[in-house]
Length: 246
Image 1 (spheres, rainbow, N blue to C red):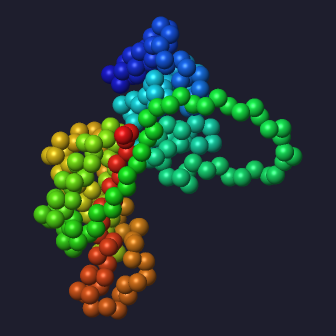
Image 2 (cartoon, one colour; image 1 turned 90 degrees about the vertical axis):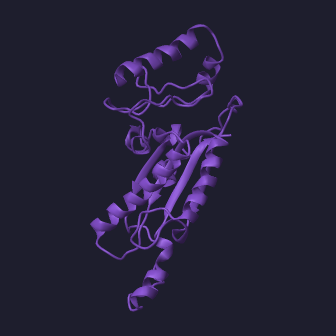
Image 3 (cartoon, helix red, strand yellow; image 1 turned 180 degrees about the horizontal axis):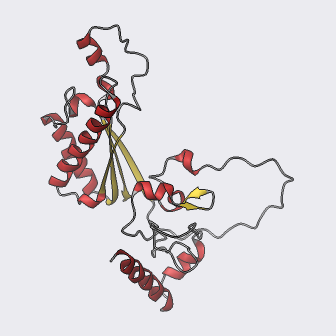
């Protein structure tokens, strides 16, 4: 079914090009992105493995698309998402190691200015742990629901591409337990946003467990249990990122 959808999607792009609408001028200016190999590619590609683009220059996604797939499917030395979804892929993944210095080349002729169109925008929001969750819990508190109500309103004010919800925990407890707890917290956020009208296929969740604390070394293990729990509160969080066009 997904393979058939990919063929239909590319046939539509080819049909637009054949009747001379605005898409050819965009394709002529947009950088060709050639995906390495075959398999479950997250974007529609033609017979040359070049990613197909919409009339606005945006890459056509397939049913295989996810933030992880966009960041692991390679196009040359970089993930294909670096060109197609640069607001989602971490910047360090989209940097190529510097090559040895070489003699300066003649300056190239100025390239034509790209066609005007909507630019992807990203608004990152961090929801604090004391607003969302109690210690060792993945149940949204009333204050957390109020925060997410505002987030859902923001999402409806843009042309939403994707929402990423990443759950975190403090360091108390085992690695395996905290990993599952962080995933439950992220899923709790997704469930609530879906109840507020956000399409579930627009929301991707991930759990980071205790691996990305924000408290650093500020909370000593010599503190009394309750004081240590209070000190580590900022680590118990869900980070949410909205990506879309205004």
